[in-house]
Amino acid sequence: MPSMKLPLVLVLVLAHNTFAVPPPSPRQASAPATYTANPSIGGGANFVAESAHFRVYGTGVSAGDAATSLKIMEAAHQCFVVEQGWRTPGLSTKTGGVGHEVGPWYKMNIYGVKESEIPGAAAQTWTDSNAGLEFLKVVPKYIVEASVVVHEFGHAMHYSEENWVDQTRTGAWWETIANFIADTYISTPLCTSAKTASNLPSTPGASIIDLKKVIGNSFQVLVDGTSGTGNYYQAWPFLSYITANPDAYPGLGKAVLLDMIRKYQTGSNETPLHTLARLLSAASGSTVSVQKVVGRYWARMAYVDIGHAAAATAFASQRNGLNYANLDSNGGGKYTVKTARAPRYMGANIIPLKASASAGTVKVAITASTSTYAATLVVKGGGGTRYVDVVNGNASVALASGEEVSLVVANTPALVLYDPFSIPTELNKGLTYSVQITGATV
Image 1 (tube, rainbow, N blue to C red):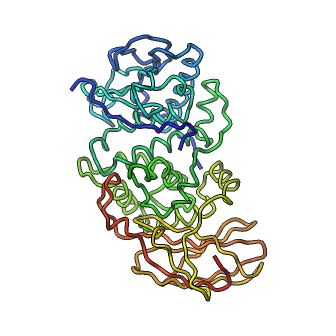
Image 2 (cartoon, rainbow, N blue to C red):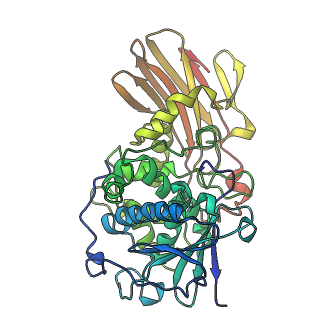
Image 3 (cartoon, rainbow, N blue to C red):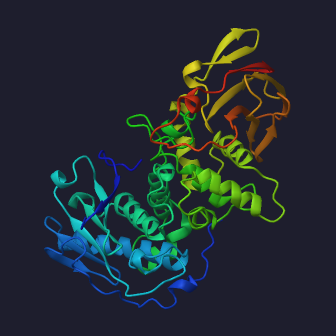
């Protein structure tokens, strides 16, 4: 979650009713260096400043803050639109969407507004439905916060891509994607050259990863939009994992998120995981399922070994304060999952183990209410991290001196069509299991 107290909200309002940098997108080749101003989008009152692709309007925004915000936005545009190939929000969705890049190209409008105009939010993305163009409303004190404005720019790019619009089963994922875009901009090397070109500090900053939510509540549905308790703002590390693709699974990698959007079955209202399943199935030589990907993601989250250096740094400093109380002891090395923390649909339990000796063998034997789970013994030491799959309920691993071990149990059933804002009771029941552990304790 970004550092501000106010939540970020995507509002689609009808105003009138790894990380290698690829070459510039061919679709951007015909775009003008400077887009055309369009004050009609959002009202156009109280112009403050502009750049090649953006304009700032509104009251309460100083010239200095407007200039800084424009630098941030230009760096984000260069990084994600020009270098990564996202569709620019400067193009109307009325011109045919991806693959039909028909101008004119318009500058995106950013409005400084009073908090009372967008209560409870730091910023919002709005849409002029007649024009097919997005604009931003931002409380002025947040207009220089990349975690806010790049988050909203992520929404605008996503809306311009169009395929997920009005698909309720993708709804909560919009915030997951926007925070992934914001964190990628802030804390990874992907946008280094773009920031340098905008005369901004280029060294990656601290990740916005919320480990207390992602790991402390890892039992929740992978993307949960439940009001007050959901994780949909915080679930973006899954997108980081499938983008970095540290396991080199065919079908994943730097293009996977755009593929999940662009190869979505238009109008199907399927979930993003269903789209991902098709991408994996279509990948040459792939035998990897979504369930395997989710299981390995959670295994790697045991030590945040997902190809994201800043997130791993955050874990190293915060791990001792995270909630790992997932199991109850029954004595004799046997444990049962707590009912309230049983892993739900595509969620998991991460369970650090205390080895009985500095070097030795740790064994686990799992008995579960269903076989549709993916469990892993994860070993971390000076030589890196290794992963041992639990097969038919059993696994063992020999530890070298200085190594530590965790058990990860992910609930990975067959895919279900569900709305993350209204999760069916069945998906929230959780996987019931017990485990016999030899050579270690919880």
